[in-house]
Image (tube, rainbow, N blue to C red):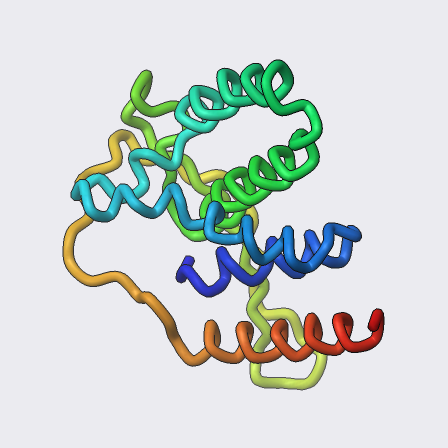
Amino acid sequence: MEPAFHLILPTILAVALGIPVDTAFFLSPLSLLFDFDIFLNAHRRFHSLAIFTAIAAPTAFLVMIMLPDMMVPYLVGLFYLGSHLLLDIFTGEMALFYPFSPKGYGLKFKIQIDNTPLRIGEVQFGVRIIPEIGEKTGSFTLLSGQGAVAILLSSVAIFLRIIGSS
């Protein structure tokens, strides 16, 4: 999934759930953290529940002890990190248990409509298991037309919310 969707979809949800707009925007780059594995030629290997837990568990303890008044922003940050994993599992393959297992997992969900009115052509839903996630190299989409439209529409919606609450 392209970075624009990782930024926009959880931000819209956070704002809809009542998270202050400034907090939602400030923390939204955390939704891209897992994609830094692109620079290690290990894309999707670090998209892992084990790595998420390795980040979340010790930091949760530190926040509770040292900065208890920052717990809500911390939880919003975890929401952004987790949203990345949730969104990417629908786009193919993720090494959910890396470094303990090289297997990749993905969910397949597709509804295809035939070129006739109100006729469902094909419905697919399943779990995809890849024996081992290989190195992903090459080019990756940073922003497409769909991502640009998502950014534009969500920006308008959030702007309207800001001026409506003023």
